[in-house]
Image 1: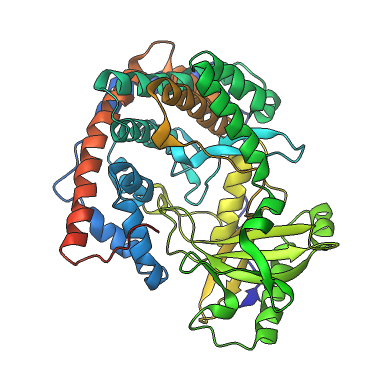
Image 2: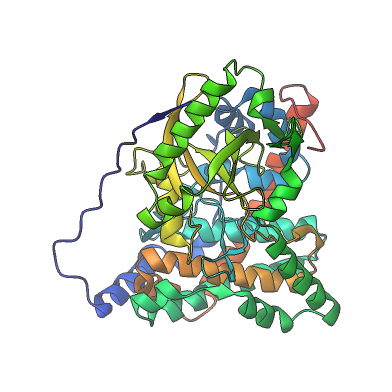
Length: 480
């Protein structure tokens, strides 16, 4: 792997004219109601030319590691919800034909409820935020809301919730988005930028709806997140091999570089190339963070399978140490390709897809990993690819969605709705969007109906994948 100098993305051109007044922005949002009635968002009628979703997934797989694709399909086949998690591209294709207001934000592109979670801020506080930005791109704000709402409906079905319970969960989440956007419309830009949800706010919110027993489970989950740090990763991933600390393999999910088939490199040459990659990535960090990174030395490198939808993309973990082995740093380098939204919302302005992810993450998150950066490299197979890097673990925590009760999922959905609104308010015209949404439930009810219809479609698509596996068209491995 050798480093390639990244070409910087084109800068956005600042508006040359005067900024629209608040009244003009409100008028813009209200005018959008006439062109795109809020009730129209309930609509979803796939056309006769809708691509086969399995074919779309196969097309994605063409650029991925072939031997890992059966893991991806096996994970997606488990349930309608796990299928949905990996089906960002089919849904982006479906959303292209749905109504949109023309108001653009920095969109997540994959805002399902499992892509929200806990992590540490630089001030060492637990915060709740969106935590996956592989598909981020400027795009319609409605698309993120619809993906979040559909994910709640689908997860509720997987958990066996009644129709009435699921409808209440989706309504609450969309209402939280709408109410938060209207609140942010009345705040200053700095107030919006600084807004976030921390541990105390999470506990306060869930205290209203959860039993004492489930509040204790929540408290244990928050405490557990703090153990998922670099020292925790040291215990989980590293052992002693030949008297030296090394990443211990767990194939096919974790494969150290030295054990990876198809990589015929002298160990010294491999280490030289990897150090070159880290040097190139280092230039994308702020100077003070470069100084911190420089206190660590590379020890080992391994390929690591992550997520559901990301399986098959090239993902690496780097093990570095500082003063001694009790000062570890684990970095994850994850391959970045074009966003699934690019075929429908326009190409990214950034030539480097890793930079696209990093910029989008910094725009949407209240706080971001201090080691977040990007690099372009020529891989061991001679192909040039883009990656973004961040810490592998830094107080990471995620909800156990399959164990949620209806009241818990409702409270969680409201947190996600608020968080998504905050992310959109940072980059979009929050005043115009709030004026479009209004104070009544018309939009909420439309998205609730959309979510139910799309969940039906998702179930059929999931069945298509299961059938493709059964017929031998698709190879899948279960339990990985």
